[in-house]
Image 1 (cartoon, rainbow over the protein chains, first blue to last red):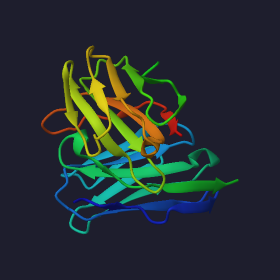
Image 2 (image 1 turned 30 degrees about the horizontal axis):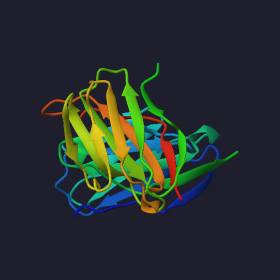
Image 3 (image 1 turned 90 degrees about the horizontal axis):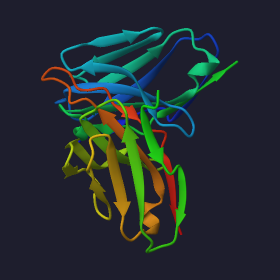
Image 4 (image 1 turned 60 degrees about the vertical axis):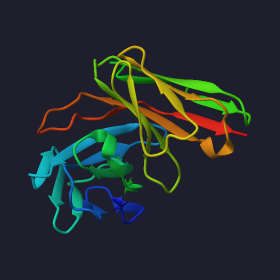
Length: 112
Length: 116
């Protein structure tokens, strides 16, 4: 059974710093990996989706990388801002959203 | 831009009562999903639907039923609520995707259910 781990569970960083969030998974037979953002009391918002044939995806200040062989993904956030404060979750799976396995997330706080 | 709308947002039930959560999406998505989110656990899929009139079980389907009578609506029912069903429930929808690309998931804002 696929297991997804996100360490640390919480992270505080001063504004302006670059940071990396980690996601590890046990079964490398995945089709895609997705990163989501969740604000308190809200639903999840899709940030980046990496297909298994890709190694990274970029959107603005966000860059996600995927290393299937080592079972790891990282989400890099450049020049962090207070508005980046949220919980970030990763999810992996074979083809089909119904097969996704979610991590428990990293709660990120950007300190002004 | 409504996107995915869930009602109600909050509900308190007594053990044994029944209720229905409604999810509506206005993006003409084929697929719809119901998840639950519990502290210390990742989102877990309860049931999902790949089209009007079809439903399928997810990872944790026991104690729940669903219906997809219209493409834009996906209902989650609890026939006899139990304290273990206290959770935050999320509905999501997506296009079917292609053979090479998974459809992006769009989530509602959640429904917080407490069973006493």
